[in-house]
Amino acid sequence: VGVITSVYADEWAKAVTEATEGRIVIDVYPAGQLGSTTELMSAVEYGTLDVCFGDITTLGTVLPEFDLLSLPFLYKNEEQADAIIYGEVGQEICNKLIEEKGMRCLLFFWNGFRNMCTTTEINSVEDMQGIKIRSPEADIYMDTFELLGMNPTPIPWGEAFTAMQTGVVEGVETPPTAIYEQEFYTLGKYICKSNHIFSALGPMINENVWQKISEKDREIILQVTEEIKQAEREEYFKQQSEVYDNLEAAGAVVTEITNREELISRFTPYWSEIAEKCDGQELLDQILSIVG
Image 1 (tube, rainbow, N blue to C red):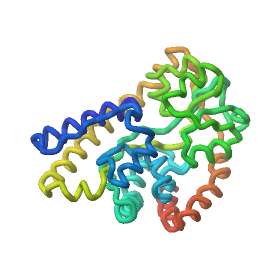
Image 2: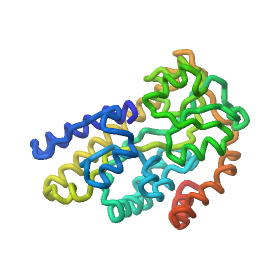
Image 3: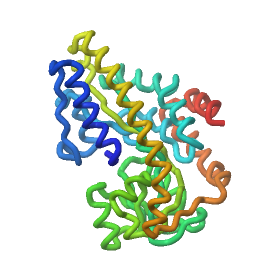
């Protein structure tokens, strides 16, 4: 969980407890105390855990259609991501998660576009060739970096700083606020605004547990959830407006990939491949009609 989302996970849990006057109490275990994201989602699916934080970029391991929401280089901005994730396409996929896996998505916080932090400067795909980059284990990430010509190395996030420090990898990728606040720029001063994948995550609840909650409390939880979502959204944009200035002030070099059209051409076949795997061509067509 990113820094901002970790803060608002606590805020959400406290707000639910207060709004339901203690009828619903949510205990938060941060920093992977209960297991990896994949393990926790599996626990919620099978009912051994009531709630966990799920990420759309790893939810594809539970329901393949979720990969369509986090296709690499798909969104030009947050507004497009919001229109898909919170729009009809996202709702259809979330409904399928309830029906097939017994899990309900209550909210997606914006973790944001992911950037690359490396020991060498990146301005183009050519500059990425052969770079050893720490990657989450989800296929969507591994595939993305391989298609870019990089050398993805799956390492738990808790070990990423040490891995870069010791040279096991030459870079990491994560939202820029994490690069700044966790000081990865001290290990690799080159920050590429690659915006390769948009990350959003939030609380997911076992459907049987949800149905056992009274209708009154379910309504309260949904209302509180919407309020916390808006608060997190405001803080997200505030941080985005400052983070690159803060990085440059700290000595980092911020670059952008100059030819986005090359990236789109490179990844368009991959988008279709992902859609074919989950029989989701119709969903992909809906997405592309919105993002253009």
